[in-house]
Length: 90
Length: 131
Image 1 (tube, each protein chain N blue to C red):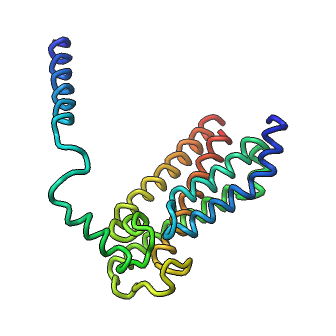
Image 2: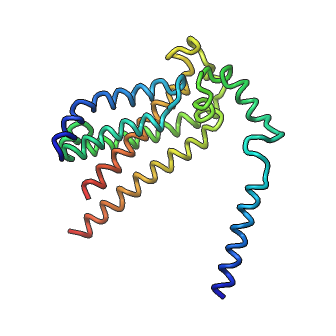
Image 3: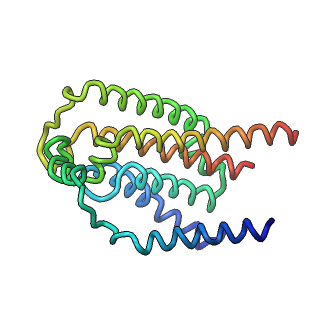
């Protein structure tokens, strides 16, 4: 049973590698209206010279908000673990 | 810690923190932004805490201060992002293009997010060193 599962996982992994190698070259695709829109209109719409910064904080603001939430949750988690560990140690 | 690390930290710490603030303030003009700037500031404080001990580092940023500032800044960030998404047209960019005072909301969010990142990382470092 274990050997069977192992072989299935191996075949799946090989298929994934094969798919990546046989797919088109990275960065070359046909429909890229969104990327072109960002590059053309980022400066007029936000006034920011750094297009990456304008995408991060303007066009994809909610994504960045989620990222900051992850960081906040990490800090709160470390705080909780350390405080409860100290209480239990005493 | 070692005397070499102590002396290097003594000389280098102001420059590290000033460089982090520079990256935060110029996030809308040059490469960088909120996360790299905050990480640079937090790594400066972590260097101080490692080389001189926790007590000396808490003279710069206290742990309670980090708690309070991080909570306030997180609330402010959520409010700003929600307000920005609802009142998009009120935040039209003014000011000189390519100058420091341009793209106001990107600048504001860069600084606020950077403060939050630095406070969160400082808090993690302090708590893990205290343990």
